[in-house]
Image 1 (spheres, one colour):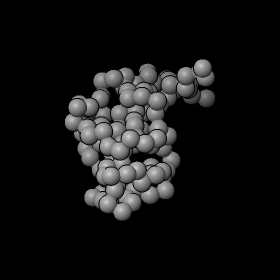
Image 2 (tube, rainbow, N blue to C red):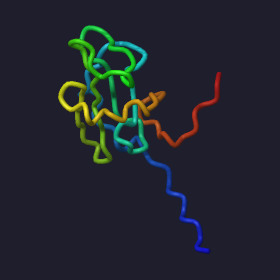
Image 3 (spheres, helix red, strand yellow):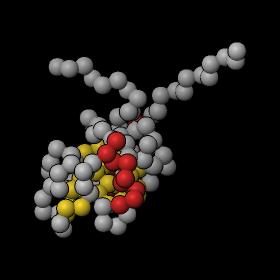
Image 4 (cartoon, rainbow, N blue to C red):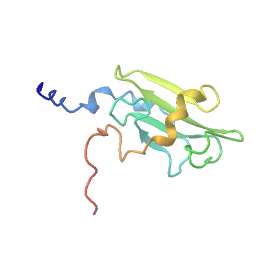
Length: 116
């Protein structure tokens, strides 16, 4: 039998963070925060509701009246790409399968921190 493939080194997620100062904070709710929408293995995609109120769980809906879910996506090249529920909803179709990360730059392969 052939040998097992080598285990890849852990991602250095800190190296691919886009300029966070370019991001508007959005509506303050439990869903606003960092995700790995681009499937890079790093929590460097910032998502939130834009508008007057939260539209609730973006896994259920990404547009609610005049409010919409927006994500600023950081690819492996570190460039910022903005997608939202009104202009390019197809790019957010996998959102239901995502989990909000504890903080920006987290490697999603890292084990979760122990409970307090």
